Image (cartoon, rainbow, N blue to C red; front, side, top):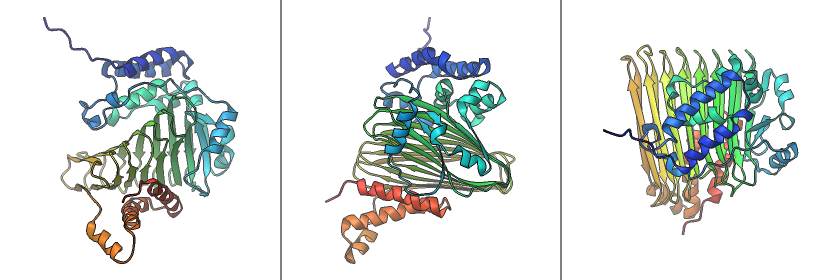
Length: 449
């Protein structure tokens, strides 16, 4: 008789299961939401944390990397949240913006510019209120797209999510300044924050959005964040995701994006913080004249691990997609890019290209790249590529021969390499602020002799 194989549960997996049972009664939502959470828990119970035998997590073995499960973060007091916001350095400097603030996974209306944003033509609601209503809005908020049906990070988010913020921009509205959705990790002790945001951009509307993650150094926070975005017909969106959390943080961020026809969406991910980070996107394009630009800037050193994973499904024809990822990897850091573009049978006339480039700045740095195309249509233009290597010695020599010191010459070349992806966002105000993040990372980079 052959015994049924059993998955060995790690300390972290056992702790997560116990935490879910302990906290379920405190989480927002009624019978409908609890049923969705229970289904997600059953998926996690069968599978456990993502590990290297799951192809999509091959390079980021979360089961091995997550030694312990931090306890769920409690809502801080208004005073503590205000202090955290006041004391947290702002990498975007003086950039004018509307701001919605979440601290340890909880939305704080008193620290946010909700009134200004609503006056500009948007509606704002805390996710916990949508979950408590236990209606169709809650179901939509927690829905998992078919593209990501088996993703355990999303299941864990459904299990534990208690708050977030929802923004709906009315049809035809053009925001006069960017919207920042700011997530702060503020506790002095390790804690796990689980948050789910949603943003709807109405038809013929336009907006610039900054999704920012910051946190104090030295505290082993864990974050699981999901952002659902729907871009309406003929909308225009420039979206920047900026992750500059403390060096002990573990960060898993997921973006679920649906584009209507004739929409234009440019998305830039900037990764500079956390000990372990994974930024994953699940995107469905919506047909004729949809224009999608996905850009990434990764800057890691020491023993950081940063994974960017991308899945784009072209369900209908006529879409134009460009993907450009730039990564600078120093020290003993490990960078990862996984990108898959799917072209469905009805997606004729699709034009999609993907490129990932990595600059290896030390002998011990490492970068894994896995671009893929899955094409089921015949009238398409698709391609992908990947490169990695050291700083070009010819370019370095050229600068040094004209009196530029080696360290400054390296800095100029790294900056130029990364700035191409920042410029892809197409927004000068946000781009200038984000180049400040690049400069700050270069300033922290250990000097070479």
